[in-house]
Amino acid sequence: MTMQATFDERPAARPAGTPRLYAWLIFGLSVGLLLSDYMSRQVLNALFPLLRAEWGLNDTQLGSLSGVVALTVGVLTFPLSLLADRIGRVRSVVVMALLWSAATMACGLAASYGQMLAARLFVGLGEAAYGSVGIAVVLAIFPRTMRSAIAGTFLAGGVFGSVFGVALGAGIAAALGWRWAFFTMAAMGIVLALVYLAVAREDRVRPQGPSDGARPDTALRRAGMRRLAAELFAVPSLLAAYVGSGLQFFVASAFIAWLPSFFYRVYGMPTAKAGSTAAMFILIGGVGMIVCGIVADRLGRKAITRKLTAATMYCLLTCGLFAAAFQLDPGPGQLVFMGLAMFFAAGAGGASSAIVANCTRASIHATALATLTLTNNLLGLAPGPLLTGWLADHTNLTTALQLVPLLGLGAAAAFWFGRRCYERDYQRVQELA
Image (cartoon, rainbow, N blue to C red):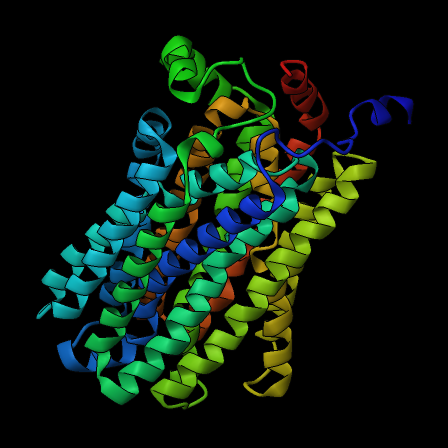
C-alpha cells in the first residue's frame, strides 16, 4: 500500500500561462474540429445503400471507401505529427482541416467508385495527424490528473462526429441527394478552421509538464530518431496501450461503419431511419467514452494501475454484451444488449491516451499520440470496416458482426499485460519533471 501511494496521480496545478477560460475555448474548438473530422469521414456510412444502388458496389468496395481514410491516416499520422511538432501545431491544425474539407467536397463531385476512392484518400491525408496533434494541444493546457477525462471527452468528439455525420448525412441525402451530404460537411469544416486560426496562438498551447526543458522542435532534433524510437516502442506500457486500443477500435469502427446497413437489411428500415437509428447507438458509444474516461481517472487517483484494469473490463464487457445480443432474434432485446455493448465499445480510448501521455515526455506528446493513432488506424479503424465487409460478402452481415467482437479478448489481454509494467514506466517519466 505504501509503495502504491508513491505513484498515485496527485493533483497537479494547471499548466502555467494558460487561463481557465482560454483552455476551455481551445478545448471546445479542438473538439469541434474533431466533430468535423469524423462527420466528413463517417457521413459515407449513411450513404452505403444509395451508392450500392447507384454504382452497383459490393460490400468489400463499400468497406474500402470507409477503410481507405483510416488506412491513409495510419500510414501518414506519424510523419505528419512529427512535422507538426517541428513547424507548430496551430498552423498544422488549420492546414489539415482545410484539406479534409476540400477533399470532402470532392467526394460530393465524384462520378464513379474510382473518383470517390481518390477523394476519400485525400480526406485521410487531411485528417492524418489531427487526432494526435489535436489531443496533444488539449493535454498540454490541462492538469495531468484530468488526462483520462479530457482525452476521453476529446476522443468522444470523434464518436459524436460519427453520430452527426451518419444522422445528418442520411437526412440530407433523403431530402437533397447524397452529394449535398458531403457539401454540407465540407462547409462546416472550413468555417471551424477559420475560427480556430483566429483564436489559437502557438505560444499559448506549448507543451507543459514532464519534459527535457526544450521546445518540441528543439527536443526532437536533439533526441535523434534512435532515442525517439526507444521512447515510443521500448516501453511495455506504451506497447500494451497501442495494441489494446487498436484491437478495441477494430470492434468499435466495424459497428460504426455497418450499423446503418445492418438496420437497413436486417430490420428493414428505410435509409433515413436506418441512419438515425444507427446514430443513436453511436451516440451511446460517445457518452460511454466520456463516462469511461472519467471512471478511469477516478480509479487512477487511488491506484494508477486501475486505469488499465478499467480498460481491460471495458473490452471484456463489449465482447460479452455483443455476444449476448447476437444470441437473440432481431427485436427490442437485441437492441438493448447492442446499446449496452456500444456504451463500452470505445471506452478504453481515454485511458489509452492517458497512459501514452503519462509514459512519455511532454515535448514528444504529439509524436507519441501519433503512434497511438497509427496503431488505432492500422489495427482498428482501417481494417475494421473493410474486413467486416469482406466477411459479409462471404457469409452475411449478421455473421460478420457476430465475429468482430472476439477481437476484444485480445485487447483485454494487452491491457492486462500493460498493467504489470505501468507503475515503473510512469515513475520513470515523472522523475524527468
